Image 1 (cartoon, one colour):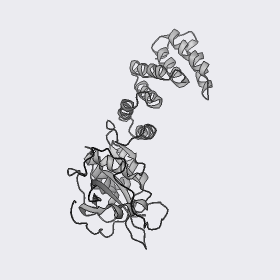
Image 2 (image 1 turned 120 degrees about the vertical axis):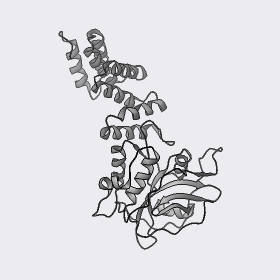
Image 3 (image 1 turned 90 degrees about the horizontal axis):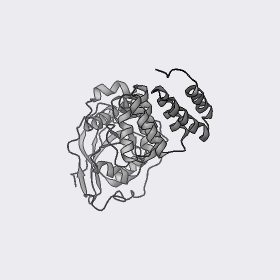
Image 4 (image 1 turned 30 degrees about the horizontal axis):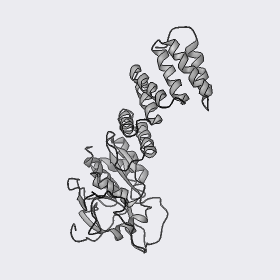
Length: 318
């Protein structure tokens, strides 16, 4: 056990737009289910920083906790203006995710499975969770950070409110978490993959990250490609980033790899045609453009326009 369970702090409200749900009375699901047999029964991320929250500001405190743990120096005071909504006396989930991206971290929302929560913690990733800690007669939304667990003792360890090491029974925690639809996320540097990442969800998270942190976006796509080397979206996105930076050789490398992995992708052939044309290789560009047109699809008009452009005699674009 981590120690004696502590009482919840008062006034830890974080308003959030979620439907109210009733109090759970059934036992919590098995939090150890799905963990590898080699998993240690007890984990504590003792190096995770702690920021005692101010009134109603558990959102900035929780976010600063996971960002600093990821090596990104942010304090609750720096984050308050980005995530705290005075009229709501709290922080919305979307604000926490957006501030994570602006800070240079990729936020990845977990599937809401207890096993995923513990797998992330076991991998060294503290997890922001949303809870309803208000009891049976009132709703009181609260963000905390899970930093440990004890499978044998059936407890979780959290940075929460003014408590650096709040110990909760699995049953108590799950009741509060379930009422928030088991919402949770990790925030990691773009070169680090969440332990529970799925291909589709992580690539989508990388795309959301790139829209806010364009300079770091390619790092997230490289992380995706290390895990899923044939992911078409990540490959094309990495090529597009190189193309925008006028790194044409790198762009060509990515687009060509995309055509090798996905020879039926019109987008890959079209993009390869464009970059080859700009590299003064018109014959190869025309061949690639014809492949795109032959594949067709919803962007056939775009492919046809590319073919007309690259097949027209004249100097290559600069």
